[in-house]
Amino acid sequence: MIAFVRLSLPIFGVVALGWAAMRTRLATPGALDALAAFSFRFALPALVLRLIAGQPLDRSFDPVFYGGYLASGGLVFAFMFGLSRVLARQPVVAAGAHATATTVSNLGFLGPPLMLAFFGDRGAGPLAMAILAEILVLLSVGAVIMGVTHGGGASVGSLVLHGTVANPIVVAIVLGATLAATGIALPMPLDRFLGFLGGAAGPTALFALGGALAIQRIDSRTALTAAAITSAKLVAYPALVWFVLARLLPVEAFWVQAGVLMASLPSAGNVYVVAQRYAADAERVSAAIVLSTVISVGTVPLAAWLMLR
Image 1 (cartoon, rainbow, N blue to C red):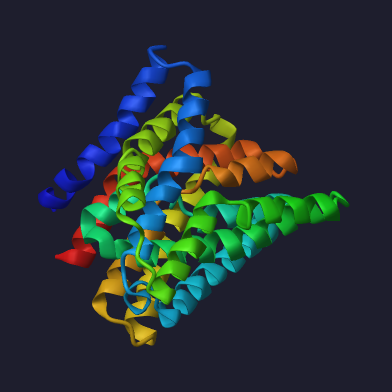
Image 2: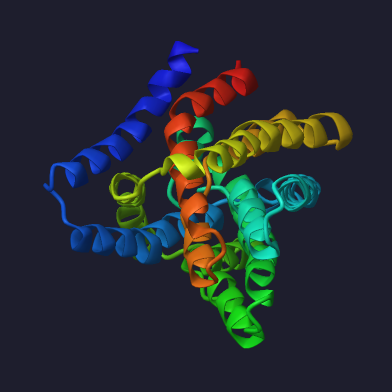
């Protein structure tokens, strides 16, 4: 267990550094925005593109894994939506926001450094499929639910399009998979450029994430909802992924381990952006993101220890 904590510690240490920099005003919100934009639009896509393009497609993609992971996320999404509607008596838009926060993981910022740390380059494959499952499907469904009662069909469609087709990480996944499928190798200068640029992805993304957490607050009124979302996100979701992949589907141990680790990541910040856009209980979603990220410092190494021991 200690070994897995040590392996995760530098990753969460950079998150803590970003948080401390914002709290002590050594970094400004403007600098944080620029750093986050650089990481999301340039460094992370370069990293993902190079990793996927450099591996045989059948080694990076497994349709059985994708189906099992997506099915697990869909079941948890439906469960949390029903829980919010029936037990908590939340409006449809709020229930949609809670369900989305429970099933869309912080794969963009935390995913690459963690998957590379635990699995090396091969971790790019399951990471890409998890992004496609959670961003292309679950976040899109959540955005439709959050926006449908506002009568803004066109704006919902535009938001879904921007969050998928125009997502630079999704574009990088598609390009990398195309190169891997066709067997076209990246030219050496381009490969070195992408490697150099992608090397900045982990530190910048994690620092920006920590800074963003520093300016968010958890109100006592929202703590109960945030705790429920966090429990489902960090416990129920990875547990169901493990059950589906390890007990119901014929996938090798590597895919089970990778799936559980990705499902155990905290809620993604882009869920808050969508919830805020449609006034879908954004305050509680924000609190869940903060709480799940803080608690994941302990639960992610625990999940890694349970899966990889």
